[in-house]
Image 1 (cartoon, rainbow, N blue to C red):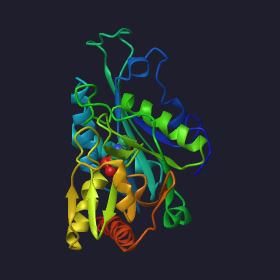
Image 2 (cartoon, rainbow, N blue to C red):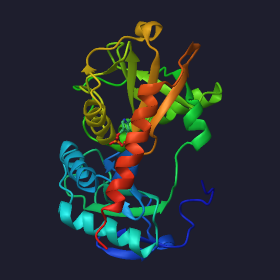
Image 3 (cartoon, helix red, strand yellow):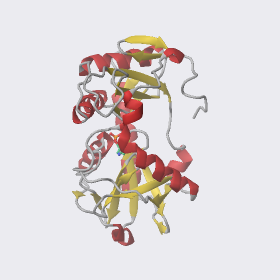
Length: 297
Ligand SMILES: Cc1ncc(COP(=O)(O)O)c(C=O)c1O
């Protein structure tokens, strides 16, 4: 992955309806989205120049805004077109796209009724989140100290910037202990998700995953559940408790960035990426490549 700072690159960014030179896509320091987290975003990937599940991601962006009380001032089709244009203008084949919508600078207080809603879509080359070797070996995870909040505490169905504060803190704490990521419990002490991905456990040939009632029901999560069912695996959505790791053989996480990534350890509990994880990794790779190959010439 490039270590170029994200504000100093060549290319263009779609910003409120226009393609701007990358370095000119700025916002003012007094922006409501920055101070009060009135900001929602998406993370999506393109494979061979085609955005996977593009419509679902852009619908979620609009829905996330509504959950925060604002209307994104572009239709889903307009954001689809913006994303396609950004990808083409930057010549990106395998990449990551970041649509974002936030409240602007007209008001600088808790009340922000009259702020303009800004929208941008950026894209950059991003072949893989974890290296292929790391993916095959599985990643090591720590437990997070922070818990996913209750639905009456935060708009947990929104991909809202503010909800990532505890993700960054948890990920940093895990990294400081030498782990790659953190697994978060929810406010009830049930297994919830990773800092940017959903989680699955394999127990005696069956796949178990938490009910997404206080965290994101990931687009990749739903895709992988469908792939698993197509293979004839039983997928059970239920309450999962941390003690169950003792009778779990395989663990994997799913997300746009991590795709299907095996987990080899959760703080001292070890797992061996097995047949089910490997099959779902292969099926997911095949699906995104098939989708890309179906691109209209
Ligand atoms: C906190 C969190 N959970 C789950 C996911 C997985 O969602 P998706 O599969 O839609 O990328 C993500 C990534 O967007 C995330 O940030």
